[in-house]
Length: 380
Image (cartoon, rainbow, N blue to C red; front, side):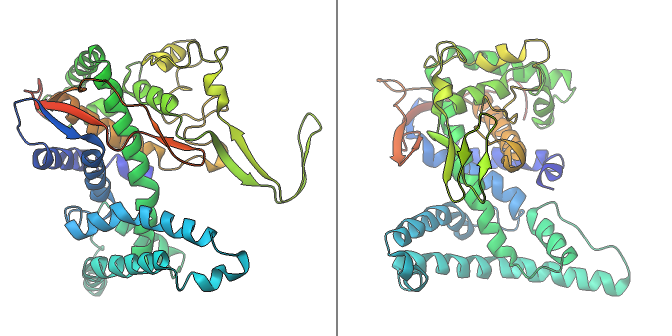
């Protein structure tokens, strides 16, 4: 359903990107330094919320703050509970301050969303009384409402919205921040991307429309998708992926038996195997574009493609279902960021990625970047 929605709201997300960047970056024509990740988090939160909760709430500061911080609060709560004895966890969850904070977040989400949901229920009631079709909106409030009504589910829409914020905002922020840092470190590639954006818009005959033309064009032989996949590959956010627990004994093709209850995961060390990826530690934005250029490989190496050779979004039936929306969201954001602003790194270059705990790594949250407003070649 989310994948179907994205084709309908491309222009809406582009509009939100324009409004958000105008607010947070403005028309600063002199080179200005800022900490990048908070800016990208704000941008991603606004774009995601435009689809998730619509125009009624996507600029609501209280909602945005809650959506941005619920992920951190819930992860903190999980860590706190894991420090408790297993036998006491059900009880301690009611007393730990981290869990009280999560419950308060849920109450706040329900309070903020209640007026919007109630207004839509009233509209539906009036439409039913008049015997006319119910008014529909292109956001996930509508999606959840339809799904819960169809399946007679008792889930709360606000709870579902918080779950979306957990899987959508910080992961997309991490990737988009890394992409922009990589491009700022390799400025010669920015011009190539700008030329591609202009060419695709011209080809789509949308000189005064939104970047929707670039969404389709970038999935052809053009390179925007592969640049982001290169950053995802280079960052290697986790040392392992697809962690599972065996529910029964599993016998592999080589005779190895994974016993019931065993924890398994797939190591990502193959990303650093030069036989699979030549010069694996060298930033090569054309790495996956070159792979896609091989006969029969055109569709395999897009950002959203999953395979045993690249597990950035998992693989198989449990591959990330939101990767298509995330990819398009990042494309739209990048079109606005690159066409409207110049970017470069301060002296010292791109900071190394940092270990965030366990097997997880990511971009440095304090990474700085320098920007200035530029005149875009096409109206977005």
